Every structure is written in C-alpha cells, then in structure tokens.
Image: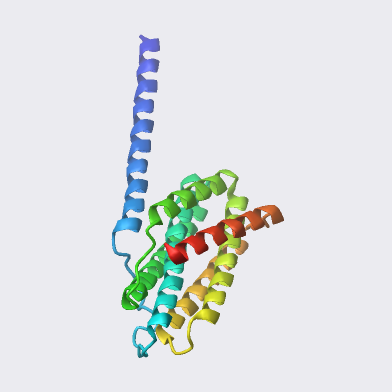
Length: 226
C-alpha cells in the first residue's frame, strides 16, 4: 500500500511538472507571437513626436527607413534575447531586471515601428528568423550561469549603443524625429549595460565579443535590405 502511495505521489508530481512546463511554453510562445504580430505599446511618449517632420528627399526617406528597419530588427532580437535569458536564469532578481529591460525594449519596438511607417518603409521580412536565432542565443547565455548571462547582456547593450551612435551619424541633421528616437534608445541601452555591470556581470572573452559583432554585422546587413 505504501509503495502504491509513493508511486501515486510521484505520478502526481510528474503531472504537475508537465503541466507547469506546458503552461510556461504557452506563455513564452504567446510572447513571441505578440512581439512578431501585435503592435508594440509604449507608456512613454514617442521621442520627437512633437517635433516638425521636415521634408526629406525620397532618397533620404528611403535611407532612414532602412536604418530604422535595422533598429526595429535589433529590438525584435532584444525581446527574444531577454526572453531566452529570463527562461534559463537561476536568479529571481535577475529575471526581474531582464523583464524590466524587455519592457523598455518593447517601447523601442513601438517607436521604430511608428517611424518606419511615417517614412513609408516596412519592417524586415525575416523577423521570425531573427527572433528564433536571438532566442537561442539568450537561452545559451542563461545556461552558462548568471554572471555570464549578465556579461552577455552588458556586451550586447554596449554594441547596440555603438551601433546607434553610428546611425546618428548617418541620419540627416534635419530629421529631428528619427534623431530623437535614436538618442533616447542610446540612453536606455547604456543604462541597461550599467545595470548589468552593477549586478555582477562577467567580462566576456574577446573571441565571444568578436563572434557577437560578426553575428550583428550579418543581421544588420541583411535587415537593411530585406
């Protein structure tokens, strides 16, 4: 009788575990669908929304729309990265920090999407591919341990900050709206990197940083065109 009861409890525990995994999988899948298919929301005003939208040439509009498409892809990837990192993080406090950063990245997603529309452009056709790839990278970073998870976050944000700075050099000076969005995004990314370091981020080895830069280069090159 005792053995039967033990088997019964074990079976019930397994059912609860499977149920928990199934529920978590549904939640994470829903996050992916909302990122890829639903309009992103912002609680903060869109930077530069009240500024005049000075006339740009068709060539300038096309160029800025392509740059904003790249930044929109970056925010798609950020959502997936944070999701993957949060799934595999062992620390509840770190998961909360990742989720907070993801909320700000959702705002960036809304801002870049709106600006792309204003410029007459479109988002990347490869967004599902970018999302899945970034999710895998986030899961791998989380599995490596929290200090490396934070290190990956810090390095990602540093590279994104540098990337945004390069775009600010390419956006026409008269495009005040786009520049305001990029400036605020750059400020937010720098804050995320600082937070990661304060929480104990490990410095990533140089080969990993280089691999991240190469992966980013491939993504930005393709997203600019497709």
